[in-house]
Length: 422
Image (cartoon, rainbow, N blue to C red; front, side, top):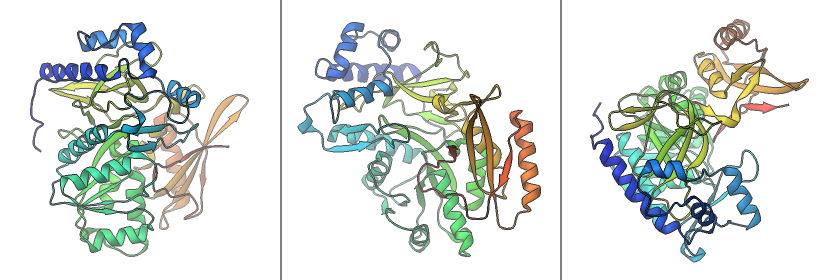
């Protein structure tokens, strides 16, 4: 595989500092949300270094942003320009709490398109490719920016909103689509539908599946399961957020790792409890400053994503991708559990069609049980015993495993919600 061109860490950080100074010039004093925070910290466009910025600039939290939008509805005060200059609005998925609304000017939107095109180029996608976007086009930003970036590159693009899985599969096959954009879960769901309808996916022209929205693209077992189902295609992972935009793409030198798009972000990784920087290879929370999306910027934003940073030559790499989210961790009988731990284990079993983890509270303590839907041809009882044993061995935790009827557990088009509370 072609190596990423070297530009040198010194050159990268120098360019980041220049963009940061331009960002701060836009923010102060126009942006009411940040003006008081930055003034108190003595942070302005004359900042001397990235290290000085990290030491002096306060962190930004999602709770702050939500409180600001609640106090100054509907958009809050994190706006660097007059409202008339904005022409795009999206919102977070709102899986917990009230969604955040996010606005963009044409200039900020174009910067995100360029970041998405960085993702596509890293995946080897060219204007000769055709792409299917297998999701409904609602207010969530990722679909829109991915689609428009591909059209701007010159790809032939198929919007898949409002269609059944069967129809999307037919579009993909009949039009000889070469790129599929979706969640890891939905890539598996399309393969499941193909199997149900007797479609041989080895005849598909699909060569690349760009996934996001879930950590599965950087989990080896999930990646292998998708690539086994789509034998001519490779998985290419990416992650981003409505609040910041496209953040990473798969590190071209090695799958299952993500590389920060440093043209657009100044990234840090800190201890969630102390906010001190972590050492290379140590787990911490990803902190992002948007360097180019200046219209509704974020400075030292606590993403909640847990990662292990490494410097690989000039590349800022997240080893193993997104490991989990700080707010997703559950302590079960003294064991720290992230949802990705179950994904790692269960995707290794070809006979697991779908699963669901039920979280309950008993005398103030969290307990888990697993609902397991076997594939139609599976030996259900043997699978149940093997999965329970593997979880006990790998997580040092006994989790009851219940069998679910074929087709009874929900399938997902967007981010899967496999962890539920009862």
